[in-house]
Amino acid sequence: MESARVYCEACGTGWSEADRLVALQSARWHQTKPFDCCGARHVPLDDYANAWHEHDGEAAVDTVWDWWHDAQNHRYGVYRAKCPTCGAWAVNNTHAGFRASKLYSPWTRDRPPEIAQKWLAAQGDEEKLQAWWNTQMGLPYRAHTGRRVQAEVLAARGEMWAAAVPEGVAVVTVGVDVQDYRVELEVVGWGRNEESWSLDYHIIEGEFSDAGTQALVDAYLKRSWHRADGRPFEIAAACIDSGGHHTQAVYEFCKARIGRRIWAIKGESARGGERNPVWPSKRPTSRTKKTYRPIILGVNAAKDAIRQRLLLDAPKPGYMHFPPTATSAITRSSRPNGSLSGSRAASAFASGNCHRDGLTKRLTAGSMHTVHCAGCCSSACN
Image (cartoon, rainbow, N blue to C red; front, side):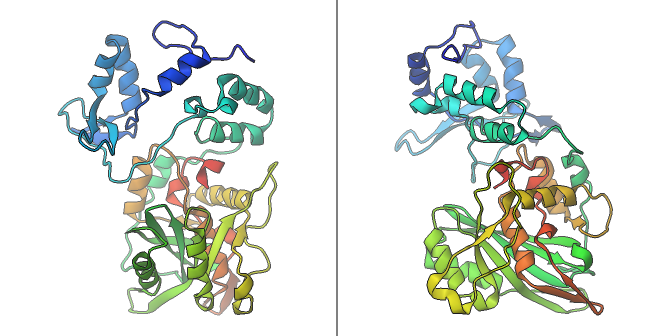
């Protein structure tokens, strides 16, 4: 395995570890998200691959990207993808996600021989292969079993409703994902037999530990949503991701709102494909505030449920309805990202019972869905 190394795509020379570490010092971020401009679909990485065969080095890069940086303060720098027809920067850079494999890591434990050894050890084991692609390459992994969830199929399912809450919804919940500098919320309506509707997707800028940000989140969670006949729906339950850099702030926020069924959640550290219930049988109550702990979600079971629900192709128990704005996001996404899947799932279960037409139906955690998880059920969706 010590012979494993990075090879130059131009001349085929294998780099020593010293060569790789030197090369890392000149690495720069490039926008790689596909985009539409001038009536055509453009994929920067594909365009670069084509340009590389026609040009040398920087000329190939300049064909696809423009270097954009803060020359004065050096606070940012990125290659912006440009339209080959008009030259416009067509990819928004307000919120940027970053992806890099461990081949870009300077740490000794991430040398190419170590990565290659893990690859060989994962052969024949789908769980280990998934972990290798997710943790070593930074890419989603699709197991070679079962039907595939097609993003194009989901995108064609966009629906228009007569009001914010369509007919069939009996309970409304919210899943909240906490990022370093913003909070993302998805409102979901739930009906009979765990059928669901994605009602709204909202982003609040700011750190969750900031009192102003928390006030905006709290105000949003207090909103009412109305059906065409005027009936209001309040948020029956909400689950907030506590696994990031604002853990204690999330705990304090949720602890003060236990009575409103606002729960802090965290994904379990499941190993070896273990499947635990998405929502545990014991949950915190007002009597346990002093020893408050987050709800631990069964991540693998949640992913299984998401995938099965996304494969349903007609309204039936568990079917997921999307508005046109959500389905357009599916087609724009070059990489699956299911950041809200766990919180959305848990919020459904946390809401308790759904009463509709005399029928009481427990909303299980398997009810959740997320438009961002259209292409995979990998641990990249956490």
